Image 1 (cartoon, helix red, strand yellow):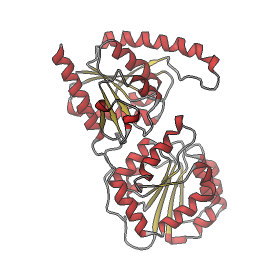
Image 2 (cartoon, rainbow, N blue to C red):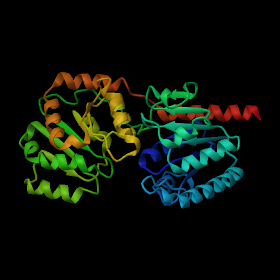
Image 3 (spheres, rainbow, N blue to C red):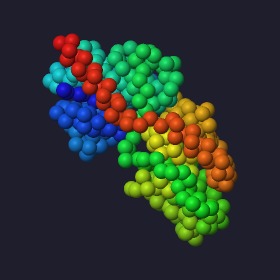
Image 4 (cartoon, helix red, strand yellow):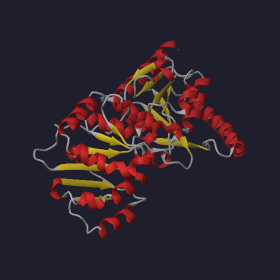
Length: 364
């Protein structure tokens, strides 16, 4: 079987795409997999690192603030569709898999036009533009949240969750006996300015907790130097670790009583799998504010706490310190978020892809 996988632009699209490819290889070791991405974007590096071949298209996103610049974007889109049609004729995939992002739009549109069944994967609680455009052409749409009928035809939806690091396993909660607590603060690989600013301002307060609170503060590469400087000026508090990147994420998660995080689809899926009480600070800089939608899906089930980006400066650290003192509330959040976990997502999506490929073969 031959599978064409497309998507990218951000880690949030690339990671699920690679996970689905890995799951396809596990279920079908003979599988031939080809990726299509956007030239110059992150996937052109990450996909080959994962051991897969990728072809880049000149496709780009639309310029929403300066619409007159979109003439060249349309020309590149037309070029990309022509290029994809040639790729499809040469590669002859049984199925196309789209995970969102510009390249996915061009590739899946062309595949559907050429009679190849397509499966879409939507990571967020608020559907992305590309997947909304392609919804009528898709045979199946795998989603991570309930209630996606407002975006997609109900008969095509399959609730699978998001593919995440499968080496993450839930640990008993609370993670350790004793009164001291562990707080994990993560802003994603690039870091989150608002979260870092809130922590910088509250360093004296966090330092004053002494041995009762251990803080792991992952700043992201962009903000590390400035954050480190503030940490040093505060006297390098022993109970606060200031790091740009966490290479041992599963262990850090395991030890945490509470996690402060952005509300990206992958982060939320990981928190659900691990049953970690969390304060979510949705990023305001994402299309259609989908991180707030992601966070609210948990908040409405009493499975997480929301602090808005604009209020994080004054509210984030006080909310965390208060929550860490409330054992019952932490237990409730732990129990409720764990119930929202979707396990083996990549494998379940891969099974749907293989079923489509077999159906297609049967027809021919």
